[in-house]
Amino acid sequence: MNLPTIQTMATKVGVIGAGGMLQYHAAGFKQAHAEIVAVADLAPGAARKAADKWGIPHAYESVEAMLAERKELQAVSIIVPNKFHAPLAVQCLNAGKHVFCEKPPALSAPEVLEIIAAAKKAGKQVMFNFNNRARPESQAMMKYVEQGVVGKINSAQAKWIRRTGIPGFGGWFTTKELSGGGPLIDLLHMVDLAMYFMGYPEPAHVLGRTFSDFIQDKSFKGPWGIPDKVGGTTDVENAAHALVTFKTGQVLTLQVSWAEMVKREEVSVVFQGTKAGGKVERLFGIDGLDGTAIDACELYVQENGNSVNRSIVTPACEDMGRIGSAANFIEAIEGRAKPLNTPEQAYRLMQVIDAVYASASSGKPVSL
Image: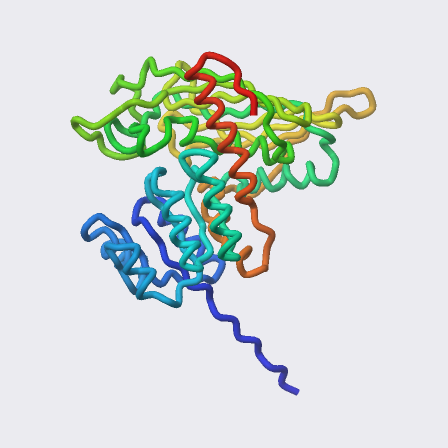
């Protein structure tokens, strides 16, 4: 007896933005068996070049044209400067598309509320590329948290620090109007990951400081980013430090920098729970590239009166979860997987970021 074959149609995706992150979105969507139908980019020729490179059938220099002509699109991926994340997310949701958006979610927490409202009205899912949640180390650690091995996480320390990592001068990264800020909003991943492990508690108070001592110093330029723009604006911080307390009684400290007097680039979340402590870490080599990085995932427990440190072995993941994060979006909107993040969590994250900047500006703690 021949059983009937169930045919499943590939989710059809459109991409807005032909920048470097497209390589990871494309790989993730392909891994999840989705089809990229179209790409749009305002820069003349950019969409066509990306379409030819990634085998995408249709290229547009207008988002409106793509949405109007490609009625078959079910989801849209957004890869553009930060200022345009919220407006484009709302536009695509209003057009009836699921949305996968690069980080940060928006320039501010109120903008995230606009995205949430649009998603609810459209009945569509919206997710953000908090790709470090998809790293094997993060997923392994989260299983220990969910299984109760760690207990309640009382305190955590989030860190993404660079010694020489300013992503160009005068471009959109360093222009607050376009980016919303410097490393705090750009390298928000470890703050997000710490709050993810902690159960995404509601923030209560924030005391923050930002520093701009090196933001004009070309010797602190990093190996990635965009070319310098002569006559452009550079008005963001090069480092941010803060203390966050939550209404649950938990506490988080954060250190984020593009340029700071540290030994090497370090990306980590360390936490202290009532049953165990832990660490998820990536240490970069001197060139700041993924290929030279050293990853670690550890648990710290007390057993039989002894201090025991457990090293958790996970598969290598050079792309820091970027491909897995994009794949999860497709699997989530198709009902095959639980979404790795929610817009409500994005709102709380942006509340913290907004409060750090507000506290740094006023010199006083901020209550939420």
